[in-house]
Length: 351
Image (cartoon, rainbow, N blue to C red; front, side, top):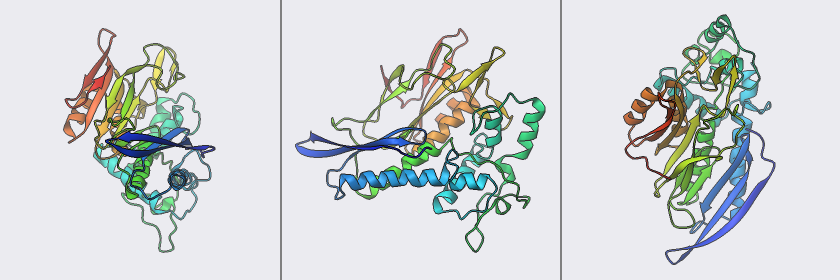
């Protein structure tokens, strides 16, 4: 989550059903990448400039509260063992994260940050850990060591002593990367709904969309095709598409998670960025990417996509089919080495 350095506002006029739409696009830099928010302001009594400023303010608040890369954020201070005064956003994210931890039975563990650091996928580079080091890290971190809810002291302050089950003040590393971008989409969408926007696409690395695009059609989202060549994670998003998904006007989050960008190879073995907190090791399975569509929010789709990438193909299929309203598209390597796809009944991809 990096501070935005440039915010661009574009006004797009389009004619739909005989009435003039007022689409705007707000774009800039946030959370280590580029974001774009498209919204139809037809019937909305808020100036485009105010929408731009409000979107930017939301992203800045997320950055100064929940970013593990912003050393001045509340999360960074808390992870460093300092006593903070948490805001509602800080407390809400922890509550949601703990619910996902319980629902996934430990597959999604937002206090397992040191494991990602140890394998080189966290906030700092790590060396190849030994089995003993992995075991020691697993014993020292994890949401199982924390209380289900954060309860600030009467004066509003909070430290790890208030959160740890053992009452010690030893800090741990909270890392919300698995849901932070989806959560950001949901907060921006919530604001847009509050001012009367019905047609929107919020893209902050992950996506929330609703209604129609300027052409009067559902929003189209490209689904990346996993690279079938060594890349060491350096290729760009959208370099190859497996197809295009259309929202059809429905309100939903759509997120793709994969193991084909962030990984490294050592001694002929691939180490992917998906870590199984239950074992402490990078996953070893044939699932390359998971695209999840959820009507319950981009954070929901974000969490489910990460969940799929930890548990592998067969369990991921069961997970998708078990969730009401959720659709999924899984790309995996078949036994013959070919790239193969599985789609849930309601997921349609146009080539």
